[in-house]
Image (cartoon, rainbow, N blue to C red; front, side):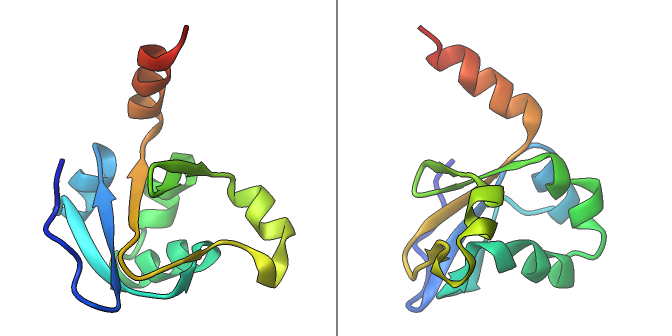
Amino acid sequence: MSAPKAPQGHFTLLYFASATSYTRKQHDFLPAPLPVLELNDKLEKLYPGIVEKVLRSCAVTVNLDYVDLEEEASKGEKGLVIQPGDEVAIIPPKLLEQLDAMTAP
């Protein structure tokens, strides 16, 4: 999936599978910087119910790198901050399993 370039001061958020169905969008542009741990709260305000129905079971990537949200939480204020121009993706579990199977040795 390719999304248009984010406007200045924003990042691109890509949705896949159930996240696309829930938001009825393939992508959004959100203001940056944004601590990765605040992403769910931001999305919950935009799409009420998305955390419980979609995001709790999804993985997050930033610039194609998986983010361990528990590890980020343990870092406190030193956790990952999404920057302008970054590409963030919400990856549902089924798609995650397919991607893992494709990259397994």
